[in-house]
Amino acid sequence: MAIEVRIPTILRTYTDGAKAVEASGSTLTALIDDLESSHPGIKDRLVDNGDLRRFVNVYINDEDVRFIGGLDAELSDGDQVVVLPAVAGGC
Amino acid sequence: MLRIAQETYDAIVAHAKRDHPDEACGVVAGPEGSDRPVRFVPMVNAAGSPTFYEFDSTELLALYKDMDARDEEPVVVYHSHTATEAYPSRTDINLASEPNAHYVLVSTRDCFDADGGNTDGPVEFRSYRIIDGVVTEEDVTITPTEESTP
Image (cartoon, rainbow over all chains, first blue to last red; front, side, top):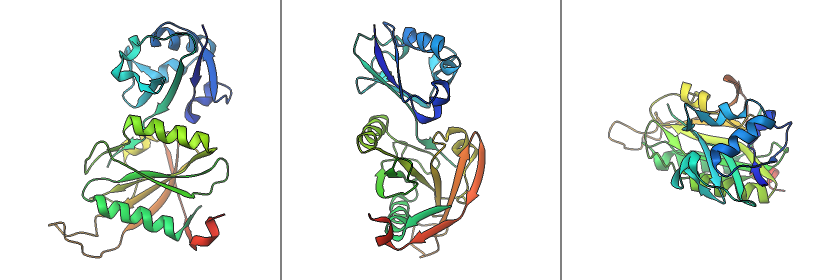
């Protein structure tokens, strides 16, 4: 099952500079585990204590996964996943 | 060094003043690899806060898809501090995630009095690189508007 995952600049150190990689999985958790097996270290940048990191946004077909089940969100062949770090800060 | 057109500089300052006392935020996009900030894109501060800013997640995706389609990247990521100096906070440093961007900090603390009245005080405008938690301030050169409009 091939799912395209768009990788943000800051995480391309894990993908040899690739802007997009292919991975598979029927849920976001499974997809991230599959990404980790090909790109070791990337999971820790996305997941913390079994939850998606607060300042990492993941979208499945343009929907923020926080609204569709978070790490349990379901995936099918041909879906597009986009990872974007939050643009945020504060004094 | 950040080179930025007068028109874009003015637009960032105006946005910061308009949203005071809340923090204002946005990007200036430019052709990938060009280091030229040409397309001013003010964003809504979804946090609506005087001490925090965050792009709305849906608008963030739309922004990045749009930049992708235009072969652009965020050359400048800007936000304002409304009660403190224009220097990246610990939170700003921890959350900085665009190693190629110029992080512009604008402070409006001297522009308004305690009641929110405009004092016409100066706006502090400074630029930094923030890479792996290391902050490096850089010079800002303001260019005539024509120069940066190809």
